[in-house]
Image (cartoon, rainbow, N blue to C red; front, side, top):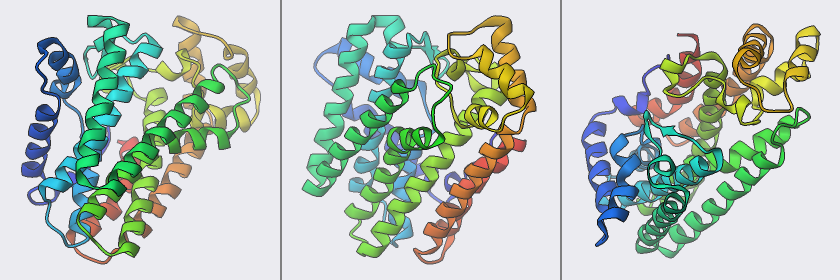
Length: 326
């Protein structure tokens, strides 16, 4: 449903991702076999590895090599992301993640929380080995992630959630990690400071695109396409941009949707809510918002110069949005 990521088509990216996979597995090796197994669970399950990809692309955009430091920086942010997924699945009581049994479903909530904490600690170790600036950046990014998650929880099942609150939440829980990845890739590559700032802005804007598109897919894609039940956010009381725009733009359908929300829903009620959202103006509005962030990402990328990597970076956000129509 989503178009191929242009960044993944860059020469040598597949080989560099192989280095990332090896580094991820090495990072969670311990003397405790059970902890190693739990910490490796979602790594083995796979993933897009977008955060390490961003770190490596940032280095290339700055005309630098993808050194081991760049790989380790991307892996550090990926471990933060994975740790947050472990914690999210406990909060959501999720049974699956990435088409496999979730850590909490297999080993219990306590072990899942501790495994998530372990991943965060390993991420911090990797960052500290790179530089004090990278370590401070990763620490502040974890803080922003927590702020974003708290902001989301604050508005659970609340149909009055402001769009501004939604945007602030996804900036913290998603875009900050993308921004940190690009910034770390630039910092450890010692690219000029103006380029560091441009790449950071790029990562943040691309992260906003990614999350809005993901939220759109949650209400438009099938369970087979998503690898999880459609409308999961609605069930959990997380009202995202397409839902908020449907409610905000008014009309009979908005009132009907409002009557369904504000509480847990399932079955026929969930199907009805999804049908209202899919047929209303909220989808187009949210898609337009994603495209505006894609424009911002492209502009930030182009400010870094020219070349194959910059062109791929500029195209990545629009590829995500265009993929919604496929």
